[in-house]
Amino acid sequence: MVSAVHSWPDGNTSTTILKVKMGVVLTENSPIPADYSILSSALTLAISDVRHLFRIDVQLLPSLYEGGCEESGLSGLRQTVVALQNFVDFIVGPACTDDFVVAGKLTTVFKTPLISGGASLVDNTNAWPYVTRTGYNINTQWSFFTLICRRYDWNDMVVMYETDSSSYATSGSMLISLVALIGRVRSDTNSTKVATVRMGVVLTTGASLHSDYIAMEPAIALAIKHAREEFHLDIVSYLSLYSIEGASQCQESGLVALSHVVVALQSSVDFLLGPSCTDDFVLASKLATVFKVPLLTGGATLVERTEPWTYVGRTAYNVGTQVSFLLLILQKFRWRNVAVLYEMESVVHKTTGQSKFTSWCDGGTQFTVSSHLPGLTNFTTPTLAEGTQ
Picture 1 (tube, rainbow, N blue to C red):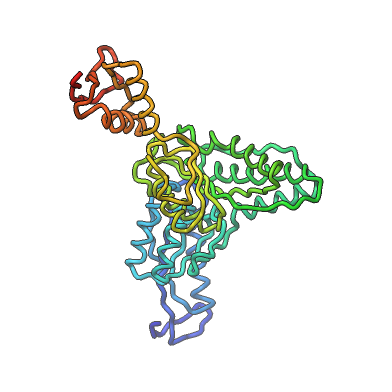
Picture 2 (cartoon, rainbow, N blue to C red):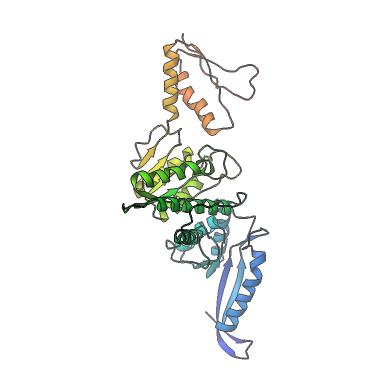
């Protein structure tokens, strides 16, 4: 609080003015409705009203970042740090969901109030006591819609949404998951008690992977339907999807998926489905084991064993077992000359070719492994020591 003499618009003169710093963490030059170029006029009017009605002098300190919503949240995190370094008293924004999540965590640590009208894909903000969201959340919106469907006995509908936008794609997928429950409820005409469990889905979206959410969505819907009909188990999906920036294959850091596992755990899910990328799976498994939340995946084939993580179940094979089986075939038929072919562009194929095959072909075993094949320029083979036989 700063003492000063100030003449207000209504003619009143006050000797006490409360001065505060407002950090604004929003996108600029982006097409989203909450871009700073769109909201700046509203912020200016709000500052004027606060000054006139409450005798508070608000200093606006923009901390903007270009582009649309990034699903990593790194841009929002970086600009939130910049705002905090300016010792702001509170922050407005960010509006993008993933940016909002990381900013909410950071401002809670530094006990700095944050207010946002966006982040509609976040189910609730109870985990961050210094955060206020003035807008709706999509999950509540769609839950209300399903109540209307139940009330009027609607069970045949088409969900239309844009896949070019990650927000619309996720919102549409959430609606599909909730709408899928309506048919099961309607078909359950007896009085059998149904147990409800919350499933957190942590998968990639928009990636060219067999385990991408778009590819897995029909199978997940069928599994939920089967669980309802056969086991009287009502599974409610909470989506925590992430995209792989600049690539269609699995990233090797695993940090993006980890943040989405945290989001799922904050929704108090009973179990997790995914992730399927190996590095994502390893970090998620460690976290799920710490919080004692079961995790199920059909991927992560490069992980040799899952025994260290007692709450993890993997339904797929692991590459080590597959390669060991190939070794048995080679020994059975006494094949001595082996050519190793694998794709360099795929992390899984590259690791399999270099690490797994090398582990049992290298070191003077009974195999001779060729170092190249003429005419095959799209493949590569490791140079291994020639065998003794």
